[in-house]
Image: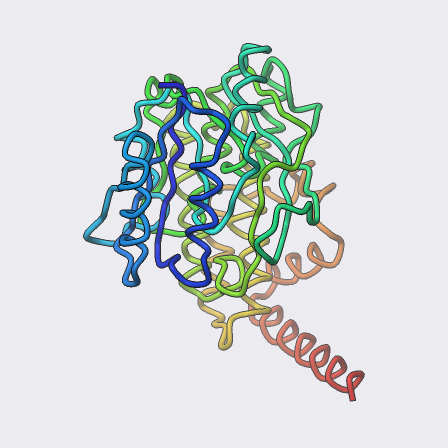
Length: 343
């Protein structure tokens, strides 16, 4: 079999989301493929919807079910264990793809000898095949034979995992998988996986549709979600060290860890969590400096992190209490001014 597409599903029955995703898969112009839908202990009727597709397309759709929720990483691992395809693709169960999506990606692989192929994507807020806001998932400079510099680039900016297909043999030979039981599993898996592929190519077309809606993971910030983001990077760090990548790619891994574990988590936590805690901020900073005490000297940190953010982080390094109080005060003043301007 040419391709296995793995679809992690959890409570996607409402508003036709799951049907729109599945319809885009069973309607693919590529015929030599299987669709492995893994229901992650949904509490709605997602399983019933999936069983309908399995019954209607018995040679194409397989439904696997978890009794306990393992989050997307667990569902993806279950799908990987069952996959028979030479290539592996992933799709979020509220997203969809153009009818020729997988055919074009595989054609690019066959033409170039790539073992990983991607494309661009759309951001849309309704079920449509009209092109929305186009996002370039990777750059042309990252493609071709993956030498050390391109591997470094993919560590820092891997892009989305679902907007790519992967040679199954590479995944199996290197025991690649996803963290289970947390959100943000791709933040760990994507950069790590990239180090094992040898040629990356892309189709410069927005063939994947990211559905933006209020229940998306990215729209809900809590301390638990922040800890998941931290945990994903802790796993990434440990895997890089255990697999022998940490020293060779130290600056790139340091930057990726600093950006996702610390910078993104710190400012989303302070801005969006209803009652932020000083103890959490201290823990977050300590987790960074224990692994990378000189992170502020990282050349990518210096170039990529904004000036205001660096000032806040410098203050946090000097006095967590001063950072915590001043940041909350400044954020409160900004919110008051924003409300006042609307009056």
